Length: 567
Image (tube, rainbow, N blue to C red; front, side, top):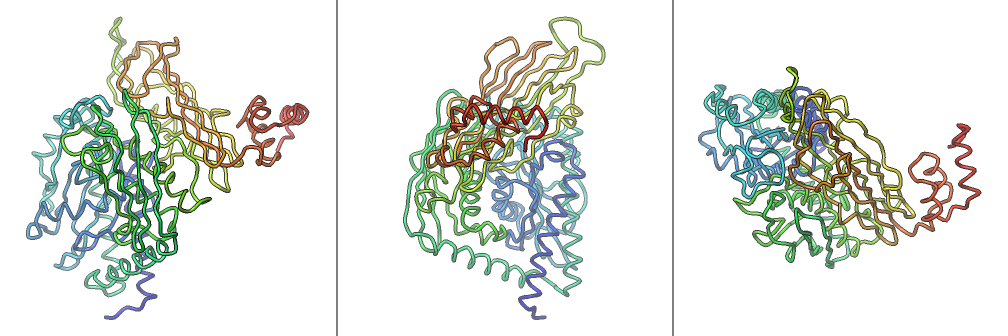
């Protein structure tokens, strides 16, 4: 049956809704708070060749764009003749999945009638995979946890119980992890059911027609956007903290007719610690940066991503090869867009934002009964991972977003959900005044957090921060954002990365970085400066120092705040 373009467009929209329902099913059924509360996941549908046709709106660019390449690996490893109805496949391979062992990717073949018509895939970040735990301290991937090669989790509907026993025996939170694995398998099954419903509604025996429509139109639309750009090249560079030495990202962005090439030659080599980034993850964020800049409304799929090519020399910080440690590959990966934007701003001025906080402000707390004195009977071990954000960079026409993760899009986790996961206490969580860089448009604010443990517990904290020594840089006259700080409540300084012990009764005080400003602060409308002062986004000192607000105006605003009449 020949379908019209209108029918194909309806089916395309339906596929996007199918994978969004798939993702929401994962959110509802996952055990890990990182999935339920932060949305650290991805979901997608693929054709029989392993080409991604549609992705869920819920999820992160790193997961989705990296997972776009994963299904082809599954097909090759499992073998086309070994793919059966009822199968479910699994891996956490950093190089054939999404970049580190803490991401479980599961793929399910979708059959309609007796024929294979496509695949569903999903990924979720899990709290623990064994090894040293989630952190940067390992010297090789072998120390970072249990490795699951691409294999069958279920063969024609029968779960591999030997595999589940091996997993349970190697992780700190076995019930949570196995629960997440079943949630991943279930969300793929829900996607499959909705796909079959769609195929029956439109009398489809396969997805060949709709796949060709999606991929052809997506590629053409993306190439048209690229062709309209100046056909030139520019370089960008930025420095980040690294683990114990700074790391430099260098990129040359070249617009070449029907493609854009991002070449990371000149970037730092491998780090000894686990912040190295496999190319699949660096590629995911380089593609994302350019795609949101020039073609944000074109849905993500294999064809709309293909014109964005990414290269990097082997065993550089953005192309780490096995067995490099890669647990915190997201730290480097999340800075890739800022490096790309620094180059692209020279090609198309006035389009991309200033630098932001970049990587997520994550930390994981490993709690246990106190060892310096007898512990109460209720004290227990627990692993609590919390995702938090600094401020995003100011945009050419809008302020940066406060405490909002860019580029990952991962949501900040509520205090209640974090404290429910284990005997941890979040004593403080609030916006950080003056942390957003001044500019015509202001950088987004970071936040303060203060964390401790319930009575009777001590803990290790795995810090996963950056921007301690290299805060976000402003663009076109904008000022930098505030840097990250971390220390214990007795003044003991702490490192931005790595596992660190916190004794019973002590707390950790953190200030997460702000986004940088865009444009000359002198050009910011005074009404917006007064609004920021009234809302507590800036202090009176900053209003005078950065924006030249007069003492009389400052006094009037503060008086209005006192009276409750401020805007």
